[in-house]
Image (cartoon, rainbow, N blue to C red; front, side, top):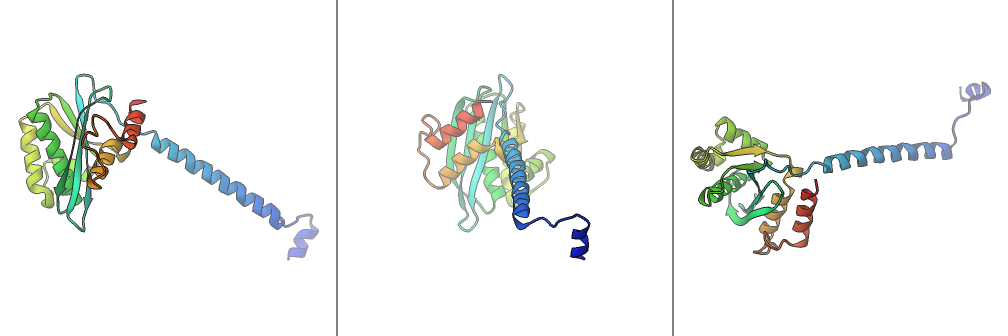
Length: 203
């Protein structure tokens, strides 16, 4: 069969030609992957409307120890940090940890009377439960606190955001959990935190 095909003028590509072909295919696939990665990284923090503030929250949680840390980063429409908070917590699940971060943000803005503010979390399940007034068993008590705090402050809302738009709060929570975050991080951010702030402001 092979000889018959060759006699009609067709030649099976040599190993070198095949290797070159597959290298080109691999290069094209790598290029496509790089484009997708760059497009994904273009998703950045979105500033709130003028005269509003935005509080990004996140939690770092270790299930095996039931401990973690939460972060609250409050910024104005220009991306300037107005207030930063981080603290250690105890929780039974990541939902509970994230709920504590949202509750803490509401407590801060209510106590300081910070006015109109949007609170963003990258935990979609939790945000949906708060908005739809459905219950999540493990975080029921904390969600009830959140609803009470929101009812007393009608100019406050809780929204979901992708992880790429919540990088700063995520980094702060992780550093706080690892105990590598300086107390003055919101005033004098360490290099890695400062880098995220700079990237997110350059939109």
